[in-house]
Amino acid sequence: MANNTLSITDNRTGKTYEIPIEQGAIRALDLRQIKESDDDFGLMTYDPGFGNTASVKSAVSVIDGEKGILRYRGYPIEQLAEQSTFLETSYLLIHGELPSEGQLNQWTNDITNHTFLHENVKKLMEGFRYDAHPMGIFVSTVAALSTFYPDARNLDDENCRIHQIHRLIAKTPTIAGFAYRHRVGLPYNYPDNDLSYAGNFLQMMYKTSQPKYRPNPVLERALDVLFILHADHGQNCSTSAMRGVGSSNVDPYSAMAAAAAALYGPLHGGANEAVLRMLREIGSVKNVPAYIKRVKDREVRLMGFGHRVYKNFDPRATIIKKVADEVFETTGKNPLIDIAVELERIALADDYFVSHKLYPNVDFYSGIIYEAMGFPVEIFPVLFAIGRTPGWLAQWQEGHLDQEQRIARPRQLYQGSDERDYVPVKKR
Image 1: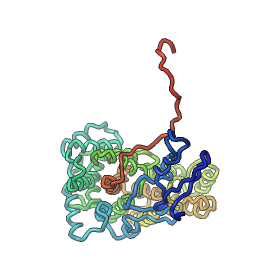
Image 2: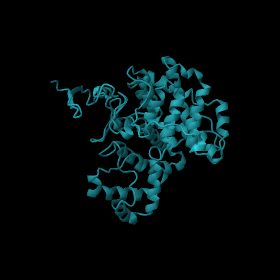
Image 3: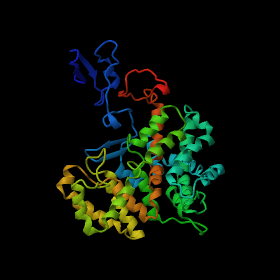
Image 4: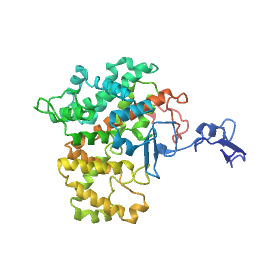
C-alpha cells in the first residue's frame, strides 16, 4: 500500500478506496467513485466558505498562519516592505521574478503612461450623486473600462493581457482620486507623471491651488509600504471572486470590478474602519480594561485582532506599527493611537486572548495611519483596492494560463422540495 494515499472505507457498502494524496490534498473528483449504487452521483464534500478546500494551485503568495509568515513569490513581506517599492513588488507578482534595473524602468514607464482616464470616463464619474460612496464609484468605473478597451477580450494574446495589466495598475489611483474629489465637491486633479506612484495619488487627492504639488516624502513612502502590504493575500474573498469571474474568460476589467465589489463588504475591506469605530467607542485609555472585560463577556467584539488565516502575529501588523510611528512624527500623534497601544498591551498580556490566538492584524493600525494622513473612512476600501490590484491581476492571469482550471461551478446540496405539480392560481 502506497504511503501517499488515503484509504477510505464506505461503511454503507463495505468497499475500500485508495485516494492519491498530492501536496497534502486529495482531488475532490476522486471521491465521486465512492457510490452507494451505480446510479448514485458519487460522494461530494460540503465546505461552507471554502474553509478547507483548495480550488487552485498558485505560486503568487504563500501564508503560514501558524508561524505568521507571508511571502510574495517566495520573498518575505518584511524584506519587500523594507527594501522594495510598490511598482517593483507589482512586477514581481505579475512576472514571478524581481525585475532588472532596465525591466523596472520600462515597467514604471509603461504604467506611468497609462495613468490618464478617457474624458468620457470622467463624465461618467461626474454623473454619480454628490454623496456617492467612493467605493461604489470605483467598482462601477472599473467595470465601465471594459467598454472603453474592447481589445481586453483577447485573453490569449500575451501582449494584450500585459497591456490591460498596465492600464489597470495605472488607472486605479486616478479613479480613486477622482472618486474622492467628487465626494468632497472639488475639481478633479489630473495625474502628474513626474511624481512617483504614491506621490501622484496624493496629489490627485490633495492638490489645491499650488502650481506644483510636492508630497511629503514620509507620507509618500508610508503609502507605498501600505500598498505593498495589501498587494496579495492568497485566496481571500475578493481574490476568489477575481478568479471565479475570470474563469468565464471575461475581460479583466469586469473580473476586477467583481473583486472590488467583494472587497466593498465590511467583513473584508471595511475592517479598519470598524477598528476606528471601536477605538472611538472606548474613548480613552482609562476605559480600555472595562472594554476588554466586555469582550471577554462576549458583549462586544475586539476589532483588528485575530484572522481567518493567522493563528500567530500577522506579519503585516508588525510592519505597519513601525510605519505608524514614522507617520505620526510627521502628522502629529493621532489621539486614538494611545488607546490602540494600551488595548494591544493589555490584550497580549491576557491569557484569554493568547489562548484564543487573537493577535493584532493588519487592520488594527492601518485605519489610524490613513486617518492621520487625512484620508476619510469612506476611502479606506478604495486604498485597499489600489494595493490589491496587482495581486488580483497576477491571480487572474495565473488562473487563465492554468490548463487544469475550468469555469467555476461549485456543487450544492439540494434542500428543497421533491417533484410536485403546478397548481393554477385560482385553485391554490
